Length: 233
Ligand code: ADE
Image 1 (tube, helix red, strand yellow):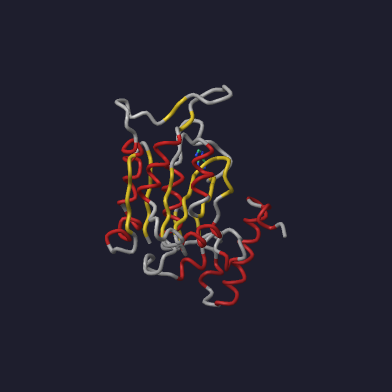
Image 2 (cartoon, rainbow, N blue to C red):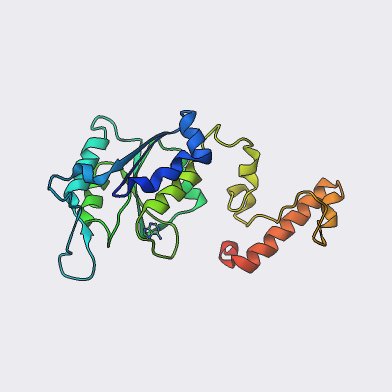
């Protein structure tokens, strides 16, 4: 999979070189390009923003640098396998289901906005050329799309074949679709007693059926308590 990230703070994407995503890059499962949007500016100050038409607080990202950026990054012959992701608090809520969808595409381009957002025409024009997703990490406002690009990249790359050491762990974790969208049950390891706290007896029973039932019960209780919204039909 090819991943490009466009940002005015390319250093922000440095963590992608670490850990699991870093290994996926080293193993050529992922081909990563990080680009400074200012490369597609032509004025002395490398301006990427301007005041909003209609007034209001803050600045808006100008369309021209983004337009030229996509002209260069998109293959005019074949961009059918490409999705441009615009991280934004007004996007659709990112989810494990969307991570699975994105894990199936050939190429993702993250367009990281800053300030009050990107001129709408950039998204409209991009939509006429490739598939576009506006995605939000959650109901809070970040200063820009970079942290969301990091989070989405990590969630997607770990789903790619050959990236996780033990693919079975994908099946069990919170929000895995096979868990029926329930939160993950609590987990324990050695020692059996720690600071006066024992591991639940059931986990020593060796009875796989009962352990699985206990875990399902724990998942259901945790989900009801913390995320009742996940239990809605
Ligand atoms: N950019 C700013 N806030 C964001 C959020 N909550 N999710 C994704 N991108 C963002």
